[in-house]
Length: 260
Ligand code: 6PG
Image (cartoon, rainbow, N blue to C red; front, top):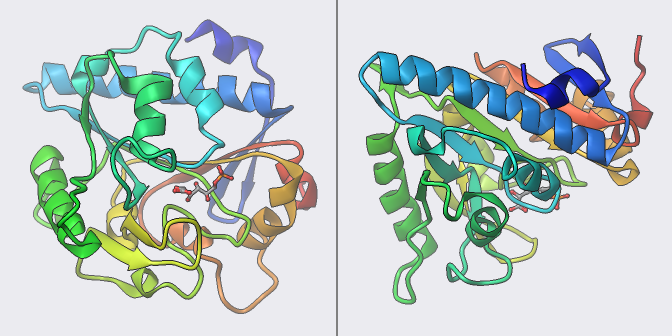
């Protein structure tokens, strides 16, 4: 067990289908999430190497919340050469753009680790849908799976203040996609065109970790995990498939939950 995991206190609770782990604050959340991610990657890389050597498939989360976790992971001994990392969602911008999730992930963690890191194939003369189709093909070729499709080993995701996750936004046409694993979608948020894993892909993951931090997310996290409305928010729909979803949250983000 990684030392940090023993030092980190957390309150673990089940809320319906959700495995919820509440950490004291943002720093404890970063340490706890890093310990969980490191433990899963070490375990799965060991298994994969013993079974022929496929790369373990890990979707990295975008946005700002995971940065502290990535920086923590960057200090840990992790067999990145056994990992194929990709972006759970991406803004359709040049690879060195300040809003690029791939650039953030590389800068804060993956650059120089030896991980295979699949970046979205942005090009000046390539539309977002064209890039999504190319990336989907590359992902399928990189990932293990079965007759029903690909099976990521781990998907890391965040949650926005409107209950979106990945780039599956309320009202988005991507919410209803059933025949694609990765698509382009237009959103009314920063960077109009996004590329995102779809629910079919997220639902097939062996594990999903959603990282949520800060009091500004408390109300929407409560609605996601203990819904009062009649339509589930996009983040809640991550739990509609077979993938076990763990919500790694800090106490401020959990403030709106009715915890046993
Ligand atoms: C993105 C992310 C997005 C993010 C949430 C939370 O590209 O913006 O993938 O889904 O996880 O918007 O963002 P913060 O962590 O910055 O609050």
